[in-house]
Image (tube, rainbow, N blue to C red; front, side, top):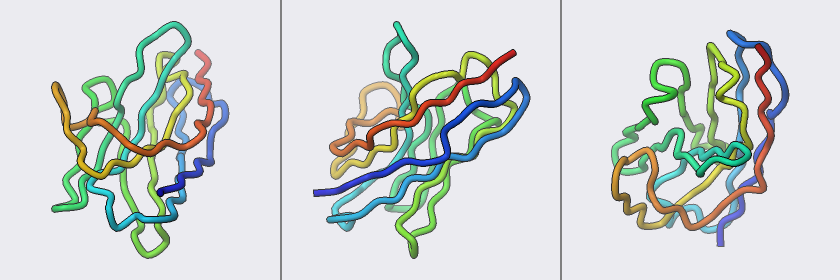
Length: 126
């Protein structure tokens, strides 16, 4: 099993920045990918960013490209999401996730994850 615990949620003004952190523990050696997924009220879940363990490649949803950066500090088993130039439409609950196989249909930024954190709220005001 893999456990994920997010932190860093909160509020920001449009144009501001926030950083999310996720501490991963357990059988992390199985994880092929780790990433961030968000869900706004009344909207479908959206894969925001994913990083793959094989070569460290990172992929982003078009909606966040150039503004968000995913990174990891393997020594501390921590995943980060740096969010810059925030927009009101970034308001959502953000989940940290990890996967063992990481198959995807449409985008490598949105694979099938096996493990999920509890979520943290991000609210961006205009």
